[in-house]
Length: 279
Ligand SMILES: Cc1cc2nc3c(=O)[nH]c(=O)nc-3n(C[C@H](O)[C@H](O)[C@H](O)COP(=O)(O)OP(=O)(O)OC[C@H]3O[C@@H](n4cnc5c(N)ncnc54)[C@H](O)[C@@H]3O)c2cc1C
Image 1 (cartoon, rainbow, N blue to C red):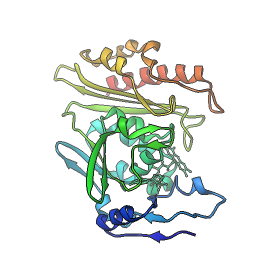
Image 2: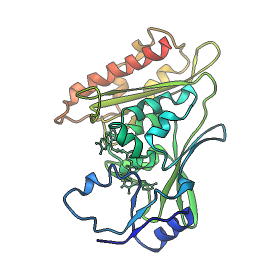
Image 3: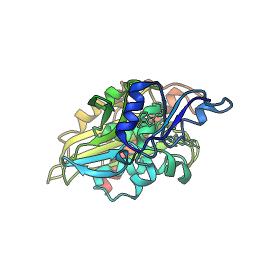
């Protein structure tokens, strides 16, 4: 059994990280399942008492979501419609007990290809704030999650917040997840679509991201370009073509074949656009 620390301030937490190697523990909903059957041998830094890592607030015209914000807090916080995709993803993460304990930073740091928070945050142009004892840096989410279970977080760093820009009043978004059943399921594929609209309904900014179809969730740049400038209206979903899925590399596994995932993503994207047009 290694050491167990539960600091109350960010300085103390970062000081410990500077002085030694610690496994960081937040909600524990990924941490413990990864260690079933073996005692926790590492030194553990439990960050759940660091109140500076909590809270969801407006910042610089957008949102600052503390690393320890739970999925239940994301659901419960009144937010502009731009962030609906994040709330919809939060509702699909495990059951209520998991949503009460699991945190936004834990989902990103665990870096599962099937992490439901990642496509929603990617579509919204999220950035990740990282702190070490003597430095702070902010990385676009696409540069933070590097691969299956791999992130850019250095051993002496903590994720302290997720930063989301505000896209203006006309922005809206949605998230659709496909699993083998409706709830409590690992995703076969999921999509997030975020749109900022001009007064006349023209799409002026757009984020489309797909998860569980590549080692890291990916933005679909070609589809975003095809959508930008068009009016959000019924029928827009016809813009989605199979060629837009080129950045994806779906695998065949117990949950579905690569072909099925590919078809499912086209359907989910079309449904997401129709849903946004209907709102
Ligand atoms: C039954 C069950 C169902 C689930 N269903 C889903 C689902 O449907 N969709 C989904 O996406 N996920 C699901 N999960 C996974 C999990 O609940 C989420 O990924 C959750 O957001 C993880 O957050 P956590 O706070 O519990 O992370 P933890 O388990 O505490 O940590 C996860 C990893 O992140 C690191 N870490 C945590 N916080 C920080 C930080 N601030 N800085 C640096 N490193 C950090 C830890 O060291 C660890 O490696 C499920 C888990 C369970 C047990």
